[in-house]
Image (cartoon, rainbow, N blue to C red; front, top):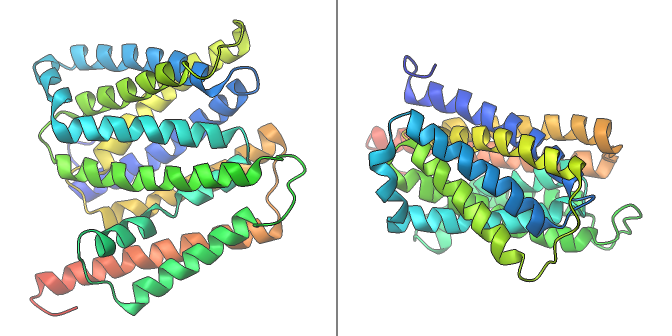
Length: 303
């Protein structure tokens, strides 16, 4: 399917597919949290995802690469996925899916900030301005100080959502650093294992609810979809130019708004829509500046 495409073309298709898959999986996960705690959801969905991912590894002939799961970068990525899963799924039950999806769009801005603060990269006033605009958009989405009748723990969820943003940014950086050392199927399996183990660990603090068919089936279907999404996101970030590929993640916001309204009756207000637009615009501009800087470096110029 992807073999005849350029790395960027493959990454664009994979990122779009991942974005759509994750939103549908999130809808099923949100439905499951109506009956089950997050720990139970992660453990059950994670177990199915591990079995599916392992089967794909075996069928694809990548068993010889399973030892790569213990590599430091791969272990760090799996651990990041574990924390990301806990924070994101905990927030998912406490705020509209469109709002949470919009917050995740801050990840390109966070990657830029990390490059500045931790890696010593020089960031000009344009990209800092874009980061500030994105932060302003985030404030419009979460509406600090505003009462949320439907979600009384909305602002707790917003904090967890921002933690998930950090997780997404770190995951993408680690995926990029992995290069092509491991097959994408094995990277996907590592993701599933991290999420499953996180659910088991969280179960020590969250008692499980009685068995019910609705959340069980939601977890089963979500496991299939999220495994596809994890495969695509790993594929999208490997060997491609992230500044080209990452903007296609924004397609998930459209799906999140539509499915949130259709399934949960969550219609974003005018302020939320404005905030989503600001986040998208600032992140897209940041990615544009990354492309400009990359071309400048190739041409031997200066920032």
